[in-house]
Length: 107
Length: 131
Length: 120
Image (cartoon, rainbow over all chains, first blue to last red; front, side, top):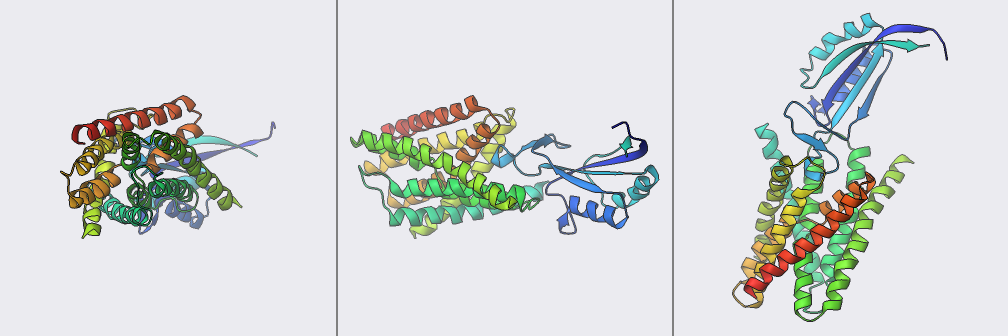
């Protein structure tokens, strides 16, 4: 497992499950844009509990609090490609967190 | 934020009406008697519990991100369809009418069938979805 | 006519359940389903009052349909109670799940009995 590593950048976007961009889920829009931009890959992960800017807890354990569960989009690629993608995200006027962190990708 | 709250409340109210009318129809078809087992509400609560298991599995695995679906079907329709107050009051009413055994059987029987029905609905739906 | 009264009561009861649930849950740490517990106990007491009153002949069929079948029926819920209990079991919180069932049923029946005893 001591393979070579290459430097990259990880883009993590947190959105609400119900967030929309022109009638389609926000996370779907981000994945489509990443795909169209030719990025290496994108994954969407579902959250089961959390709270955000309105500091109201959402959880799938309680029916009346089960709206707006968090969804996380993760994209990893070379730094210049990820940074080149950011203007496309800016158009979406996201409410949630958008994070960048440097990563090493094991080849 | 305010607009969001209003449309959620509106679909819950509409769903609640549909659910309550369905419950009313079942209780008209199977009317309660002073000392008999309340089969109508028993049936309502058991089927409603099974359906919420099915619904929550579908919302999580098949229809994520439909903002109003869970409030409409889960909180509204199934919440309005099933009832806890008729369950507790029927237990009291039966006990007061001298049918303590029926009351106890109804109390325990609903729990023993309805709660596994939630789980069964959820697990079977998840299994069908993943095939 | 009765159908309309049931519908009207439910149109108010269902959204009120949602609002009470969220208001109660906002005051707790969102672990134990106190919101559903609250509406179920309050609804049980109210329906107990009405049922006792109906047996005593002081509550009309119209009021029973509107406030009992419609409002109390939609305010309270068995499906959410069941779902939240099963989620506690799935999370491994067996003690909480058992407590939810035991406390909801005993308090709900006690509330219904109290309401019933006041009017019957």
